[in-house]
Length: 130
Image (cartoon, rainbow, N blue to C red; front, top):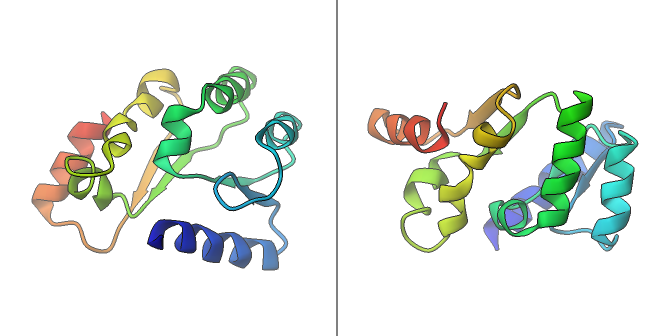
């Protein structure tokens, strides 16, 4: 899958720079171990797919704890144009990413893309509630 390959490439890049990071999509570690590591602020970056975010109550609970502690600096959605393009068709969990602004209103959201038109940008802003 292209998204998982992108996550793995990005993860390897930041790890090579010495930045503590983990992927919930490509790691062999069990999710519970990663959540405990996140609670101890072991990672600066956590990579995951929209599906993992939306369908994992354990991860959402971990984020809620981190939010209460004030330890989440920002959410970054890479290839954010997928919210508009794929969300409507075959990856419906992209349409649920507005939960980030609803549950964690004080955390900034950064959306990255090189391909969004003005129409797509406006759709993304509307769908994400930003």
